[in-house]
Image 1 (cartoon, rainbow, N blue to C red):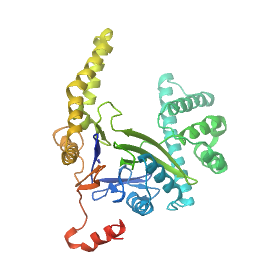
Image 2 (tube, rainbow, N blue to C red):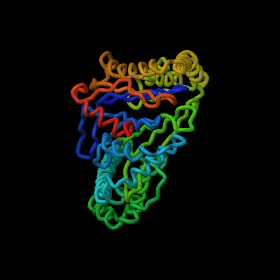
Image 3 (cartoon, helix red, strand yellow):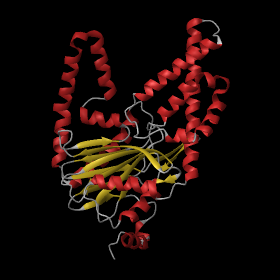
Image 4 (cartoon, rainbow, N blue to C red):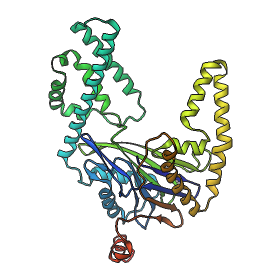
Length: 396
């Protein structure tokens, strides 16, 4: 389990991440303990990147992608952080790192994986219906159960908030190939359920996945930004050189505090620290209130939230806004270590404890490394330092 966190105050952003990274694939997952997840854009910009969740995109490591984008952006200037985000997305769609063949291969693999999920839901629905009726179902009854299952999946998929702004061009353009795949999975029931199956797959390819996507965090200042900003880009897939993604911007002060904490994994631990109560425990209390005091449920729940906000969250965020940049970095690193320590004294699964990288981005100093672990001994590799600064344009 990995851990990454961003803390934003009114004048700086602190990024902290462990070195644990997982490569998610349809055939299995692989975890590494020496990954780099925080990246400086370059010394000319007050902008940094952090990668969370999947360590690669279409088979290309994010470390390779970010190295190329550093070179691409070396001579550019971004008036606002939003301009950098737009340029980065354009870079991904035009950098030719991802071949057309590989894009389609991954899309069809994803299509097959989704059909296996649908068949699992089919089996579950039929078993539940059989247990309910205790009798053998006719073919028409089975089709009715499966159609109901498909319609429920369609409706639940449509309610997901993270829909990508895209059309159905992938399914329409490759409909013949896709239909051949669908017929292999559904065989003799395909014709009876064709409309629902195709509609469900269209819905699926309009949304961002929860398991295999990569979250890229872009943080810092554009040239004209007075206060720090953060953008979360959830990148899911690319088809026909079109990137499927969602993005969300946050500016210092958007939440009313000026400061903000964004944990990108193991969020319960950070929520307990910020809110003074474990999220699951708070939900359990609210369930008890609903059960035993339903007439007072909303009033009591509001009082719990107000108490948590006024006595825990507000003082913490207020302190963050006045922390020196060095202390902001220390707090970010401490919260990372807290996510490692908590499983040791609780029933949670133990997580891998890798080294921690920490950086601070401010308007005045730009991107500054506070702590960075190398896979090699830096004192034995002076040529790396020289090469690094030459690539950044410092000696030009």
